[in-house]
Image 1 (cartoon, rainbow, N blue to C red):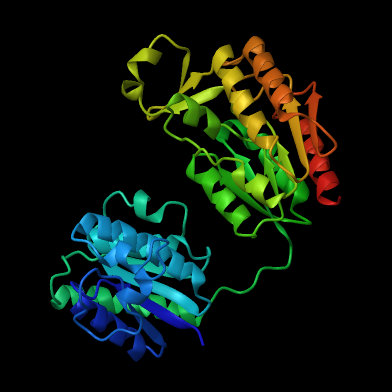
Image 2 (cartoon, rainbow, N blue to C red):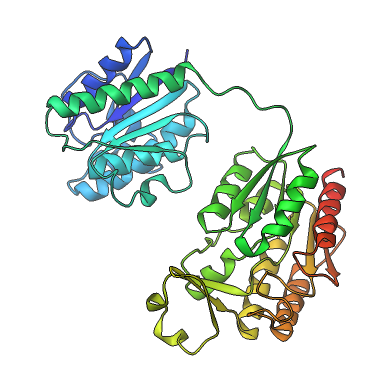
Length: 398
């Protein structure tokens, strides 16, 4: 029978952990109290820190055998993530913590499937939560006061958190409509293309569009690795530019890795590879000051990629797609890769584009399963969207 996992460091937050578990039980849910502390628990728990620590690749002593708290917290986070992945009885997970506890508990939450309810009540929830949430669907709830014993406010916060997680677990989302899901990547400068593709595919597919802002691409790849997507239409690969040249919306080194690992049908293109993203002009690194820029808005500044940069981008993408075992069809729009890279546009540079296209085609190593098609079109032309749709349908039906 599935239970709500109530997780915290029972050595330092035992009183709060017990109160939260009791509140969830009073709401009618089954609970499992989990200790992820690095010292002796102060309350009874259902799963001890020793049991969690046993899941560390280096064994229990790697987590609990030393005197360095920072090292112990990091090791416990690794162990808890592996523990969470091993369970099949989690209806939902709620955690409490300060700095160390938040790091440990969210490590496990990030390992859980997207859609499974997750709430983290934390002293850090009103600051920069990106390191804890990453590309998961964790709900961060501020504890307001520190967790150093219960008080009139912390009781209210924890009670509300208990009601929230109990409600989520009791009323799960209805199942999807049965259509297979596909991931698509979009940026403002490729919106006409991706919107048209999604419209053309929506009758047969649940189209999940991801904003290509670094986290968007990583979210799509997490879903790919999780087996929740049936294919990818990766029109907007711009995150690679920021990774290679210091932009603020970068991919990770594992971009395209999920597609290679899973072998899913993949249609890709060069959307927005003409730009690197920075914030306001004052944030641009000094060594780029003499470059061509476009002010997207007062807080976002775009830098045009040079021919040399385009060569590096193309080789990076092509080399990784060459590792794919599944069907790949990469489409090249010869008349421009974004709304700015069009004749008369701020970033129109056919020479740089030609270098990009050649590098991709050379390094992707076309064969029976990997194709590269050049089209005398702009990426936002309706004909290009129709070609991308047809390409995906063709390989998805193989």
